[in-house]
Image (tube, rainbow over all chains, first blue to last red; front, side, top):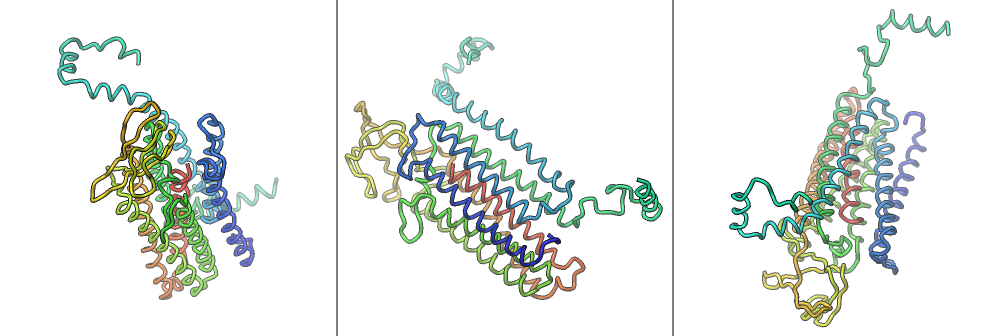
Amino acid sequence: MGHKSYEESIKDVYKGLILLAVVTLIEVGISLFGKGHLGYKPGPEMGWLLALVAIGLIVLSLYKAYFIIYEFMHMSSEVKGLRMTVLMPCLLLVWAVIAFFQEGNSWFERRDLIKEKNERSIKDKKMDIQGSLLQKEETYQM
Amino acid sequence: MATETVVKEHDHHDTNDGGAWDGGKQPFAVSYGKLMMWYFLLSDAFTFAGFLIAYGTLRFSSATWPVPDFVFSTTPFGGHGLPLIFVTFMSFLLIISSVTMVRGVQEGHRENKRGVVFWMFLTIIGGIGFLSCQAWEWNNLINVEHMTVTVNPFGTHTESGTYLEGDDHDINAGDTFAAGDSYLIHQHDGEFHPLKYKTEEGIEKQQEFGPKAFGALFFFITGFHGFHVLSGVVFLIIIMINAASGLYVERKNGYEMVEKVGLYWHFVDLVWVFVFLVFYLL
């Protein structure tokens, strides 16, 4: 910060405002396009396009986050040790996202099975327990 | 090379500080308060990340999910069918208030008391504006559309068909719909009225409620963020009054309190970037 004149740093702030506003507008545009509000509606067969829309939105949001942290919060002028202790732990979230979304997907695939098991009568359930500790073979094949 | 060694030896005799971590120095070159603000924000980021990842997980686990541009398509003064317009406006409010905060911190570096107070005042106005918008949005969802923490009247069709009856809003008997279309189950006299429809195979069915988790996630996550904005506004007001009273003129570290609350305020904006992404854009 110190190496910039007062006028220069004021200019930078307003440039930042315009940048964030433009990126936000682009995001909204991309999102509306993906939902079919801009004339053309991508159908389910255009899965790759919808994936591209989602990736585009995520990348632009991450860019906004980077800009806010580095320019507005002045992370760029902090010492490397401070930068690393704050930013590196956030990488753990990458794994959290992968693991939990995998889990969500697994719940989705098992929803019917869970419903079916919940609807079984109490009598059936008792029989299962009394019959054997081992479950039926097809349970394992899930 | 030789001069360098000489200089180093000289330093050792003088201050005994070979490295940043040998004592007598601030290794991270910031005050304790600022460093702890950064670590608080890091931990807060994990809390928000936990919430948003829970949203993603439950969304992945559901066969259908309310489409955000249908859910959030109402604006004050009777706007209907305007997807994302109102939340985009809310995002701009937060971005602008973040920019005015940066200006406040800059004036603090120049020890310009009037500048600090002026820009902080504008930041507070932006924060209050955002909260007002959120209050309107919540009121609309709770009192007009009747979404609660456990009831989500926003559903999605999984097959195409024809309505057999109309609500008194935008659906008439005989209207057709396709798989993936969203609907809102309206209330009449305090009771939900799911509409009956006929599928293409001629089977009679009625609208089902959307995944329950949506309401709970929406109110908890935007509520938690809104609570951060609210406490941010309170801190900003306190620090603005302190600045106006001339308290920071006498302090050795000058306007550092303004910087610290500025970090917090930018973080609130930063979190909104992701709440906006997850709830409204995707």
